[in-house]
Image (cartoon, rainbow, N blue to C red; front, side, top):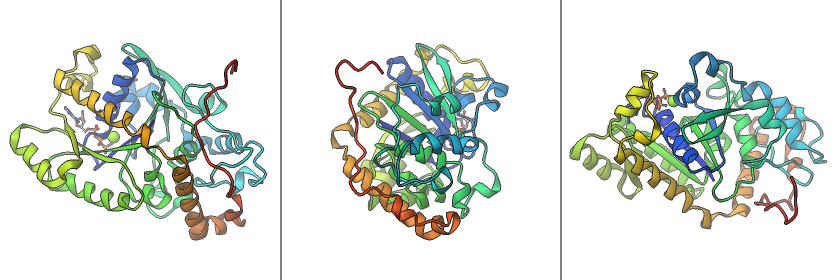
Length: 329
Ligand SMILES: Nc1ncnc2c1ncn2[C@@H]1O[C@H](COP(=O)(O)OP(=O)(O)OP(=O)(O)O)[C@@H](O)[C@H]1O
Ligand SMILES: [Mg+2]
C-alpha cells in the first residue's frame, strides 16, 4: 500500500508520517519509509541522531543506478540517459517489491530500528533552489516517482512517503501514485486552503484523499475542520506530549503514546487498508503513461533528444505478482 502525507509546511507531515510508520512497524508489516519532503526531517523523527540522518544516502544522487536497475532489459529504453522520472515500466523492466532485497535498497535504504520492529528508510536528499518549481528534470522526487511506478506492493506491505503538496508533484503525476493520500491540516484557513488546491488536482484522477486534522484543541477547532472539509475529515490528532518528548531527544516507548493518538493511527491504517479492494492496476498504469507523455512533450523529448513516447509499452500493465509456490527468492 502506497501512502503519502502531504500538507502545508509545518502542518505536521513528518510528525504524523513518523508516528504512522512506528505504528506499522509494531504490526510486523514490511515498511519502506521515504522522506521526499523539502525539509528532510523524517530520519530524525524516526529517532536517528542528526549526524546519522545527514549521512543517509540520497536517492537523488543515485538516479543513474536506480534507472539502470529498473530499466533492466526493457528494449524500449535504450539507456539510463533517456529515462526520465515518468518513464513507465514495460516488458523487460525490473520491478520492486516492498519486502525484498534489491540493489536499489542496497544503495539507497538504511534499516531503522524502532520499538517492536524495523523499517527501511530512504531519503531523496536535501532540496536546492533548482529543485523547486519549473526545473522538472532536476526534481529530487523523480527518484521516488520512478520507484513508485516500478513497485508491485501487496496487501499488508507499506510504503509511506513524507512529502509536500507542491507544484512539482502535480506536474509530474507524483500525486496520483498513492493508494491513500493523507492531507495534514491544522485548523486554520491556510491549513485548509492547501486541502482545496489538492482536492481540485485530485478530482480528475480518482485520488483517495483524507484530511488528518493536526494540533486540534477542543470543539471549536473540530467544528472549523468539519465545516471546511466535510466528510473528507478522517480523524484528528491533538497536541502530543509524546511527540514533544521525542523532539527533546527523549522519546518514551511507543506504547506510551497517548491513547487517542494511537487510536487515530489505527484509523489511518484502516482507511489505507480499505482502499486495497478498489485497486485498479490498469488505471494506475494508464495514469503513469498519461503523465509520461505530458512530461515528454513539455520538456523530456527536448532534454534527452529522443522521442520518449516510444518508451511506452502498450501491452504492459503493472500488477501485483504473488511469488509462485516453491519460489525461493
Ligand atoms: N500533534 C503534535 N503534537 C505536538 N507537537 C507537534 C504535533 N504535530 C506537530 N508537532 C510539532 O510541530 C512542528 C512541525 O511539525 P512537522 O515537522 O511534523 O511538520 P511538517 O509539516 O513536516 O513541516 P515541514 O513542512 O517543515 O517539513 C514540529 O516541531 C513537531 O514536533
Ligand atoms: Mg516535514
